[in-house]
Length: 639
Image (cartoon, rainbow, N blue to C red; front, side, top):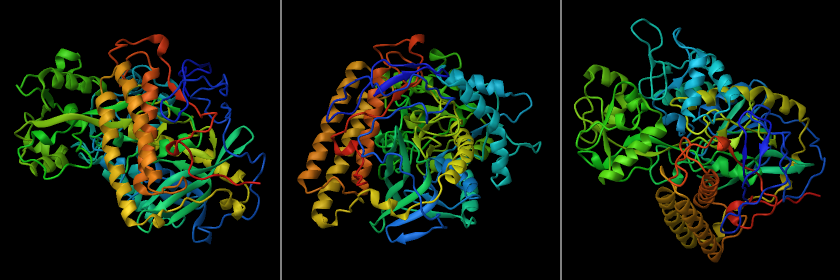
């Protein structure tokens, strides 16, 4: 159900809401919400949940203690902490909690394959004497269209500098100026130079330093190529409890169950609900979808950030031989360093849209480019940095220069063809100030989380900062929860039916299912781009809602006609169900917001409405979801 909650307030507002139904999304107000729920007070104790799962009552897990990587059988592993995701949030958290117990880092592909690795610009932090935390706070709130939670913003901006110093102490190498101090760049929406960076490959450098530390920690086990299927949950009175996660090894096709006292979701965003995204292929919204199915509260999903400047392959002198899996990002720092935007007639257009011109926040720049493309019926615009010195360009943006040069473009002489692409989910699993969720034992950090920091639009380079701050903030409550959980009964794994790899269907049938799933995936992406893009309308959103619901039902019917069963799992099918889930969350949230704020712009409500300055909340459904895509794959069998 979709509701709105006052930012920074303990008063819960209940406008329209919705639970997922077999096709369309009805909006029914839930009576299960408490009237006292705020960002700063967290979400664990203030949300009453009526679950469709079989209750455990007040059962407590009581038996022997977890021992390092204790394995009772070939299909279950036991850890104190399970971390889903290997970006900056997951790795930073793992390194801290590993001082107190055993840790499983579960990652979908190779450990380095995360949004962190593709982050070019840098990390924002107040490290210059002429800057201040108050300046950073105000820049964040303004960029977030005043929907940010102010307490969260102050916490992040205050603790950010120390998180940077910790990275440096761990061996992360950032650029320094001629004076020997850190070189601080400036990006759109920032009033000061405060972006710590490693050329235009900052995320890669942070990931390198963290992975190196992870490799030498004996308490941390990394499980690569393990796709997280569903969280393992039970009901304890009015609370949902997380006990771990089911995964499938995408190389061996073996299902592996992780039982853990604490689970951290750090699985990134859902950029691949759109056809063009800067996110790597792994960003299919798995964490958000799993959390939603596990009855976690979801927030602000209508705010999808489109990066204004992804490389437009159609404008390159030499076209790539095949389509990219993810768009190549041209960092915000190019505009921050003086880059100018032009249409194809070499007319500079940003001053016509905003007095901040190229340094306006991303939502403004993306809408301006979108308007230019539609008015002029063109496929891309141009971003020019060539008026800067060649040596400066190559030293600040070596990765971008090298990528463009592959296709015959010299950015020291020629403008770069760019176009907006889906980039970042400002919404996600609702988290309190310690990264806690309303599901006991489940914490979130990074892009999968909605902490209240970004509001309606993320300020450039605040994402890595948020991940670092909340990864550290989740450590203490996680340790306390782990220590207070007592012993674990190793029969707990028997509470849930295991997922099944559908080998018995045969390769011919499985190939048909994979082919159809890929076709459906393309159809979903096109629907999202056409009807739920940078500029929206109620009619188009309702069309998207209807078409997505019909497409989902058609796809599921095809699966089951081929012999698929509810407990079956496969990478392509599970990713597809997660993409459907996230797309529906975005559409439902967008339909609920009757104003234009930040990244959500609708022609039917083109102005900001101060009475609507509330986060959008999607709570747990109180009735059983009947579609395969919308429910947990396993059923509990608990006496």
